Amino acid sequence: MAGLKLGTRGSPLALAQAWMVRDALVAAHAVAVEIVVVVTTGDRVQDRPLAEIGGKALWTKELDAALLDGQIDLAVHSMKDVETHLPAGIALAAMLPRADVRDRLIGATSLDALPPGARLGTSSPRRAAQVLGRRPDVVIVPLRGNVATRLAKIADGEADATLLAAAGLDRLGIAAGHAIDLDTMLPAPAQGAVGMTCRATDAATLAMLAAIDDAPTHAAVRIERGWLAALGADCHSSVAALATVTGDRVTFRAEIIASEGTERVTGGGTFAVADSAAVADVAADLLARASPALRALFTGPSPASAA
Image (cartoon, rainbow, N blue to C red; front, side, top):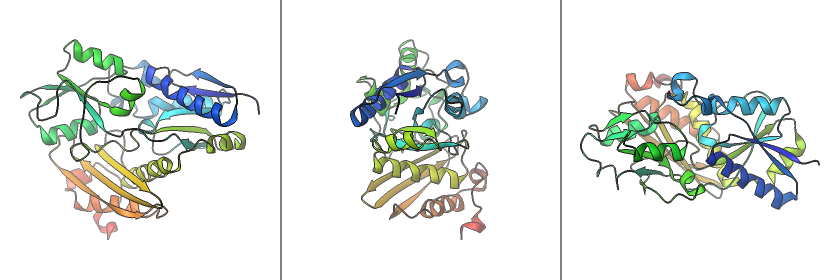
């Protein structure tokens, strides 16, 4: 097979992840891999939360188009930024081993250590809701940009603190912040996972990617994304989930949260990895126990259908 063209966004973190995939492919197949930078709408628009202008597709639609047009053979993504439903003709082919799933707080040692009325910069509905649920006095201010940009904005005083994914900081070699325990802040679905997409009909690339696929990570991400689909969540939703796969069993934790942190419904369970219906049952259970106002934020099953 001729060399592969690997598409990626051009941020330092995206490039670091692309090089991780490139190195894995070269080690497995001794194949030439060319990294192709694709500028996405999410990279171009930095002054508004993505949920206001199109959601997660703004990180991926240009990469999807490049795949379908044959400009690239595979694309590399931070999986938490990938829409739940992929465009027709594109397959989620492989995952690298998952990294630290936690968030890190920059600007204080813990959420409880933030001063009264502290300004916390984030454009993540999940992070905002989780923080406000614990610290309703905190003021949420919009903060976007790559990791270095957000760190610089904190240093410049645009906010007192922010939250960043531990996995991204580690991949960039940045030893900053304090990890938030999972009981305080459950991560975004698929956080810490790097995934690869390719054309669904490209058997050669699918086979090459299968050789570097980490099965436990792939299973965990599939479960978390399946829960999102069953829930009917979108880019405005404050949701968190984590699947921990051990052999053929998975321990699953999930929560849905009101945008101001005033209501938090948690659930989960332990079930077989192959039990495709289990996450739909978790989604139905959470929605059944949510208030009408929180339930109305999702398009998943109604309480009547959850029985």
